[in-house]
Image 1: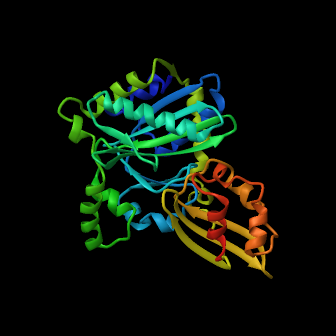
Image 2: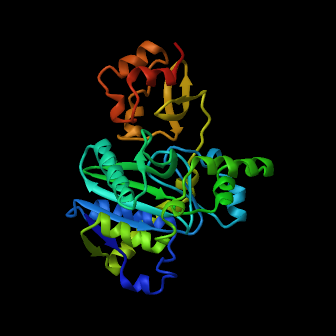
Length: 336
């Protein structure tokens, strides 16, 4: 596996070895590596950022992020191109990025999670992988991960909670209410593990980063200054209002469901004269295929169960949304 490193010119001006880059730069860096460095089959890098909330590709910022709190506390808000839920990052935790060549996203995800678990176990930490693509220590989450696919390449990224600002984590992604926030910190703390509690006496965050890179990678590629400029061009997309906030048109029907082991779904359907004109699906589920192309199949179809089932007669829905079949998907769209 190749470690992708930034050039010395950036590292020399970095504070405590961490370049002053927004989270969007590293998301753009993932894209660049996936699209332009295809001669490397497996790539890995890790990074840290100032306080930032990262929400999933299929989520509405208004539903997931306490925008007022984030603005008041200089917390950046960035949408990523992978599915999954809303997470908080700061300089006390670490973000991992993994890019490989392949078409089987599920296999890539499983392989990557296994490598990270093995790395943690080599430090004496009893980490395990969960069915929801998290990594747990003592039954509590220490790492959450998400992914997306471009033709021939897979991009996986996730958090590693060495430590974090618990108040910011809770306040940035929950409604502004002092009582809820107070209870929220205690509740969240009961459900997450901080890696420092397990390795802090023998390894600080910088030492852990160095160990991780050496464990995961056997060689290194240093990006050129030109490549950094190319990444910065990609980064601009992440800061357009259209991308961050998305659009929220009026829909005739809105249906909310949670499927155990799959995720939360907020389905919005535009109907005219009992004909489907548009479907949008929001939530924290994981995509393994092209959702937009999939939903186009339903355009101008009669809004009834038989017609919807017919659309899916030759489609494996699990190749678009992880963990769901045609029957469950139709149930999301319409009542029996």
